[in-house]
Image (cartoon, rainbow, N blue to C red; front, side, top):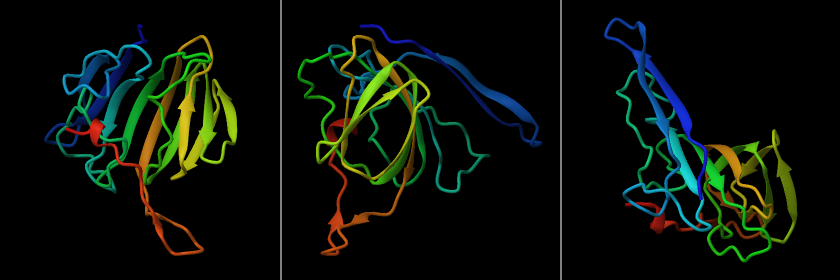
Length: 182
């Protein structure tokens, strides 16, 4: 399986505050489960981790830290993540990789290429196509690329306060993802 590469250009400042290019690099999608950042295989999606802010609000004058190819969680309360996820086509096959999960974040997702099914915990689903945007507010969900072509989605994940069950006051915890973190 082969996914498209992404050219990532990062700007910054010199010691006088003048704009500079800090990095200009072509990134290849990585296996999010592999600490070495090797390419994904089978139905494992490819993650292209573009950037993570150093706090909220972001600190624009800190040194650039490259998170691409690193094994990192879906969301981090200490900053905003931006990544591209390439979902391989699985057609009607069972997909036991892209499981139901909840993140403690507001996720902005833009389909850049292809189409993908967004499934909610009660079975509701919708198909998103190129140019479609989802604003996902810490809901339980899963993704399934039931098409015959790979799908590419740009995500910006903003840490959020926990969601509560308003009837009980219980905090609805995010899904554990220890397999994604070193």
